[in-house]
Image (cartoon, rainbow over all chains, first blue to last red; front, side):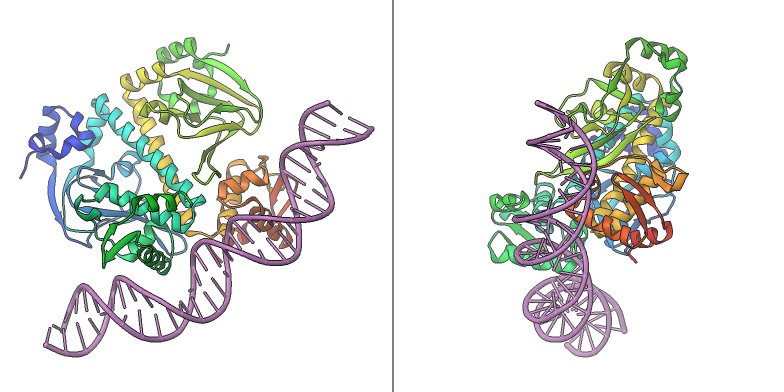
Amino acid sequence: MSKCEQCIIRQFNSLKHLSREELVRMSNCKTSKTIKKGETLFKEGERLKGIFCIKDGICKVSKMSENGRNQIISLVTKGDLLGERSLISDEASNLKAVALNEMQVCFIPKEEILKDLSKNPTFSMSVLKEMAKTLKQADNIIVDMAQKTVKQRLAETLLNLHSRFGTSIEDTINIHLSREDIANIIGTATESAIRLLSDLKKKKIIEFKGKDISILNHNELDKIAQGF
Amino acid sequence: MSKCEQCIIRQFNSLKHLSREELVRMSNCKTSKTIKKGETLFKEGERLKGIFCIKDGICKVSKMSENGRNQIISLVTKGDLLGERSLISDEASNLKAVALNEMQVCFIPKEEILKDLSKNPTFSMSVLKEMAKTLKQADNIIVDMAQKTVKQRLAETLLNLHSRFGTSIEDTINIHLSREDIANIIGTATESAIRLLSDLKKKKIIEFKGKDISILNHNELDKIAQGF
DNA sequence: TTAAAAATATGATATTTATCAGCTTTTAAA
DNA sequence: TTTAAAAGCTGATAAATATCATATTTTTAA
């Protein structure tokens, strides 16, 4: 099993602030897992016994609304930590996480992380910073959901996906989301998402074949996102 | 000037985890302010030099959307801390805070709080917990905004306002929000909020005279919030 | 390989919500 | 106190979005 001290992934998240000593201890209690596409990392209401450090792959983090619709809150990917919140608040998870492709993750037991949080102020400050950042993003999402049209949100989502998962080759978005997933990100009916995607295609702003989407006209997409 | 060691307000937030010593130090550098109704505590883009501890009064925390509409993200009241996030992330505030009535607040300089955060793990853990809680609420708001109808959101908002600001007398909601404020909480046009409030009044589910709103039929309102 | 299931697509229609206009009531300022 | 401004209200209409129906394509599993 790989060792945390030697793992480069930790450079991308708060774990980079742990000492060599702390990392060695973590290595001894962590477990590595492969999670297949479509598998669930954890469900809503589940009590997590630790946190995940994502070494590879992408998962969608979502929540059911009272209306019985699924809302995707975020996409979590290589380098991210997942599950810190439930651990910190010591409550069952309010979210569900499902792999979008094959994932490599490490699972670090709760006690280990809590120990480090209380002993290492640099680490806890880093986690605080990450949470402050997430909270800021959440504010932005709330405003978008409340005030923007579905068309604006779709355009914005495509731009976001491109900046996170875009490849330089042909401006392709390197993540395979179903139309339903896209609809669940922007908060609309699947049919509406499909229709709007087709519109953008007709107007030569995007191009797609199945789940491979690429952006042809960034400028125009940006204008749409801003409401023009 | 009042002393933090003797202030009961701190029992309601993370400051309760500070030692007597830390509180005395805080007392010496904090300032107390009265903020009048309608005045701004801080604006979007402003760099905060500390955090606010709310002793009395209520303020609305909001954010402008790219569409030029204002979205109220939260209502902050007696006992709450305000501004920790900008302090932690060391960025300009992404939010604006405006007093809804006369407020009594203490302002604690940034350096003081940061010192306590790095020295007192119980305090920083408590701040972490609060942020995890806020993040969970943010998730709920996102799902509501994305998936619920305006009618549902209004019903839910009225129930929330009642549980936070409700009085036992006649089930009155003890906070004076303009129709525009209500619209900006639920994310809709002011006219739509007014229309839906009138509908609820006609159906004897709520009653109001100006800004004094009371709930006549909790059950029914709850059903509406859930989409029936 | 083929049949069934799931995902994608599109049209027709209903529902929700925003916008605009004009009116009345309330609030605040001279 | 008077009067201008702001807030609240309502109707008419337009625009956005959801829903339902159905067809086609793609994927999956036997």
